Length: 156
Image (cartoon, rainbow, N blue to C red; front, side, top):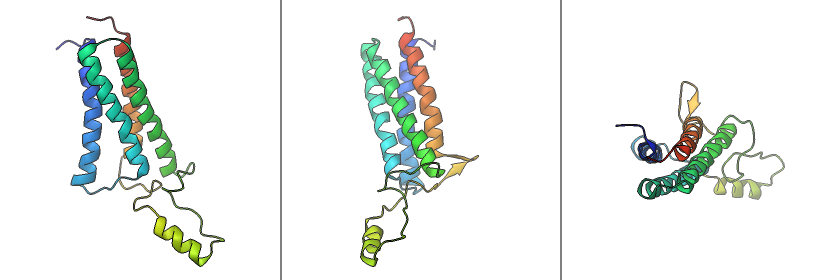
């Protein structure tokens, strides 16, 4: 198998499929429920799969660039989510813990009842100090670069 443009399209499309399947394995096999930001990281992979399949079938330059933009987007969300997990910045108010100081009993009760089941600022799993959000960011930003390389390759 030569590493031509079409082969890169297939491999990179497979990468996004593998990322989605991996997320499902963590969710449905190992029982790690995703938070809101985890779900947000999946959507651009779906777009990359669609653009990748079209690029495999149609070729061209626009589709691989759109796939690159998609995986770069999920990588950027992964970077943001990583910062939320490490408490470097605040995440969405609907997905992270907040202060209870100054809340009335009714407000506190409402906050507890509206709290998400899985918070974005918790780290449920990590390996060698890297969380799932960290790994998604690293792998997806690398894949974005490879999509650009594939898009610029001479057609064969």
